[in-house]
View 1 (cartoon, rainbow, N blue to C red):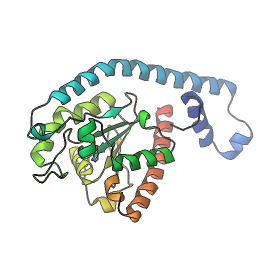
View 2 (tube, helix red, strand yellow; view 1 turned 90 degrees about the horizontal axis):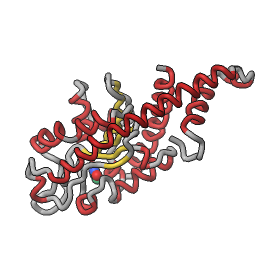
View 3 (tube, rainbow, N blue to C red; view 1 turned 30 degrees about the vertical axis):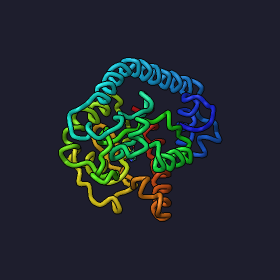
View 4 (cartoon, rainbow, N blue to C red; view 1 turned 60 degrees about the vertical axis):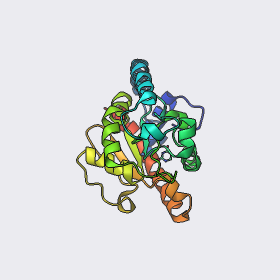
Length: 255
Ligand code: URA
């Protein structure tokens, strides 16, 4: 997941090489056979991921066409467009926000307003392309107040939407790391996995481990639009996220 043109196999090998002690590296102690074995293992992992992603594309497309036609809750009455989510089928990293805002409701795409620009910037800073991750929300239609403002989704909207859509997206994509943006997504995912949410101001940037994936809660980027302190906190959390992704990819090469 770097901005460079190296292939994923090269990057995997670089990660493995970086994990060696400096003396091992300076002695160039990776035996050619070991290097070849690693290359073969990584190529195998990638081809099985490609195979799985082909298998996963159809169910995800079908799920997304269900979402855009959904009328299961009141949000369907006020939405312009449903926003299923977007990104890579192979994504190891999934971002989950709260719910679409005004711009997302108009465009049918997640995080494309001002908060989305900040998310794009942060991704760029850690060398991850938006197209490499999967971005979605707890609810798929914009929660709007009677005055026409964005609001938080209600408990019943969340409990109607998530088993039908978010949970299925997670099952299909099987991310290694889920980054929850803001308190709604964080509380939902941590609760779901029997973990105590706690205040986002206390737990942002920490890693929670479940048997399916790791969870890193962060402040919602919209909150950082007006507060420099929060923007800096998100920047630091993205650095932690970068390290977590590196560590998780080394673990998958070792397993
Ligand atoms: N805020 C969210 O939580 N999700 C979006 O898609 C946009 C803004």
